[in-house]
Length: 62
Image 1 (cartoon, helix red, strand yellow):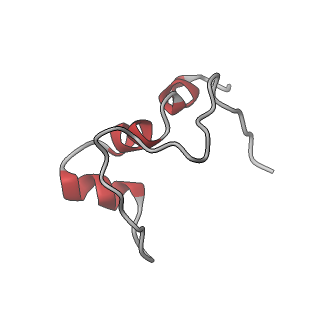
Image 2: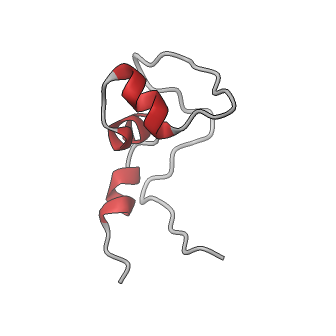
Image 3: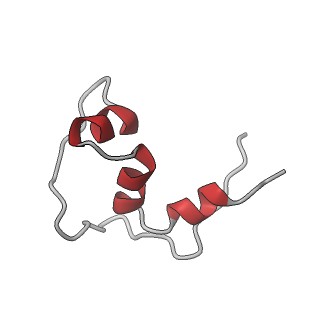
């Protein structure tokens, strides 16, 4: 089982980012491919959709 840690302020499942554009993900798409298409860093796209997740990513678990 992978290490898992919840963000300090988990986002509710019904969260919709303000000024976001709804996109139905298709087979083969990744955070990287979606971010590349709109010209941003994949972690910025993830943070936009799941606020607070970058704080979890930045922690050193070692």
